[in-house]
Image (cartoon, rainbow, N blue to C red; front, side, top):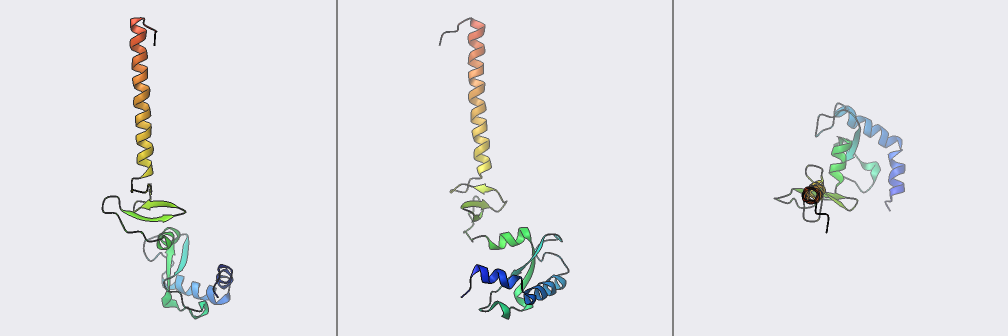
Amino acid sequence: MKTKEAYRRYLLSEHWRHLRLQALIRDGYHCSRCPQTHHLEVHHRLYRDRWQDAVLADLETLCSVCHEREHRPKVPDSPVFGVAGSIGGRRWNVLGQAVTGNGVPISNLIQKHKNDRNKARNKARKKWLQRRRRGSWSC
């Protein structure tokens, strides 16, 4: 039975270290999806029934960003907002922005809130100045 602990032990094995090194050398110590040469990880494109049966063709060198993208749960892309997936209960669009359930980037909502707050402050400030000029301080 495969468990996370057994998989962690496999990743510390001599077999995995040798296979990982072969994959890195084959890919020239570059991510196979982008030009990144740092923070490289070796990804299993195919998991076999027994981890020890893994072969070089099953592996792909990826940078940490591409590897994270590969493991994101697949969510159908929205034609409007381009929702790409979710991690930790939060959804992300193709630009890497956190989005709400309907696909609106959270940063847009925060900016809208700030704009609305500033409008309300400006309105209150304007009203206060008008009262001050008239000498009318009653509410």
